[in-house]
Image (spheres, rainbow over the protein chains, first blue to last red):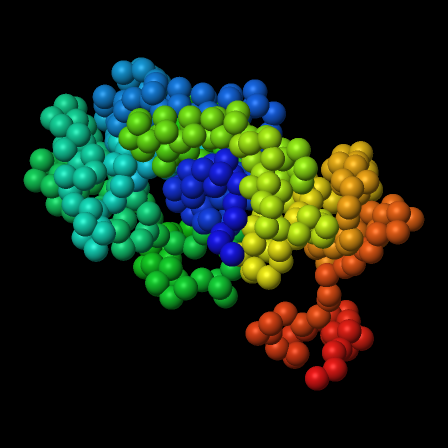
Length: 199
Length: 199
């Protein structure tokens, strides 16, 4: 007997299964839920997503998502436009803003260099970052993740910027707050020791 | 500093986070992916889901999802319409059809009784099942999951049907194929022993 699935369920599942991390099983469960939702709610769901995608732009300065030409952070006169914090994705901007304490501006790369995955400098927003450096910039903070791709990207960009005489810094490695020495991996522990501060 | 999230990202995340099992973190990751998808793909995603929801009907007989008045299984003359297999959801119909070996018809309850969650007999398709039993039916197989809700639902429906003189059966409990005795829980092992078959 062939696979039996009602067509509407199948069509919705297929769409959901295109999203990263959503397999056919989860997609089927979500599709079932959606077909049971009131039609107005599904319409709201579909139109919100489509409208958001249609209205989304990349900030002409920092490349973060925005609905205007320039995002609210880049347009904020109160912030220090001489310090640029370079991150992989919009969620990293949210993380810094949530943490607080940074009053500079950002640059969103939308990806990290990964030769293994065929992601080269032209695939991420490095050109756009370099274009910003002709202005008055004191420091570029490389705030990519402490992973192989994050490190590769940070050192690649750093090599491009240093000749311009602009200070390039990197986020500190160390023990995460609230963690336990016992469970820290060796690299983290070594870095925490190397980067120890005077009290 | 307040939470900072580009509005389009926030709107899409909010919609996705309404789905079961999708938290704000996963929703954010999916939303980011969707805003990076080509606009035509997002349009296809949104319209497919909305169209499917708009076109979906419940089979007038078995209550499974379908695009017609009656689903392809209920409309199939080759199947034995005297044997009705009662399941919780459309995905269970797919599971049986995939497994093969059953040539009767189904009845989809769209839920299980759960007094704790306030799900009473009127919330699932029991009335519709009872209406089918006035016809020529030999057997009703209760194929709800072997969980508390599944058992409760099976015995509730069974008590309604027995007075009609129709045979009511329940799926067998036992060891799953390919499993190991060592890891079987006590209830499963006891049931497998009780329901042992002669070789």
